[in-house]
Length: 253
Image (cartoon, rainbow, N blue to C red; front, side, top):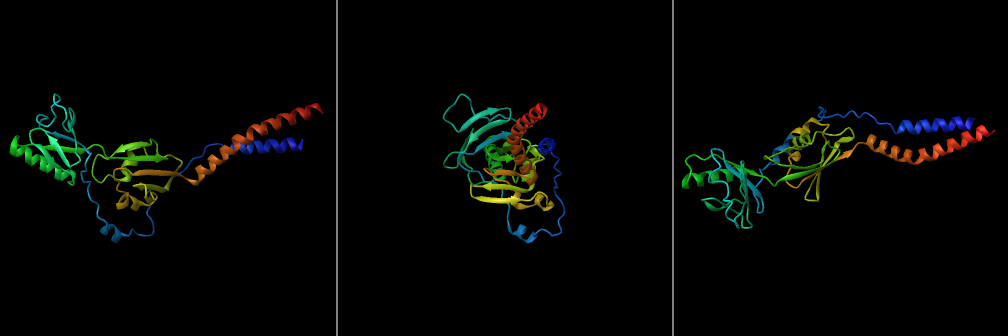
């Protein structure tokens, strides 16, 4: 009977170990060490510069007329039009073909510079007071790991931060390690951000670039819990079989 009781106790321990836990994350705490503001001043955060193959969404906020590409024409870099204006692809030579004003060089320009250039050209050739809105719609980052909604997220504005994108993804899961958030850039450069530190909000290294992969790892407790669950899933069936055999043997006595 002692063996029976011992086996039951062990079984209860394995079942309890597989239960879920509540993880209290600590985000944006004030740290005793102050941020290294000198290094932040040295690092200049530059706006994205347009490149060949980028997709530009361009519209005149006063009217989409003269901005949307002509749907009856093919072979142009205009690839679509809707109520938001026209979508145009930047060619390999860095130019984009726009209605009326033709090919203009935009590669190397920031979104703000390209917007002003297009406004000036339309003002000279066609429109009285154009108000141009320009977005680069193909820029995105990839969120993986312990976020509520992993996936691809567009960078719809300049200097989008890690916090903003995680917020769009619904925040961190309870299993996330808030101290180990990796930004992988170009498949080589890895930057680790500690979200438990309030200085991470203004950290220049947390400004995302197109193509970045953000990976949020599991915390130690979640890893330990997964390991225990995997172990219990193997041990519990064998333990149940052993208990059943032991009960049958005890009753037969």
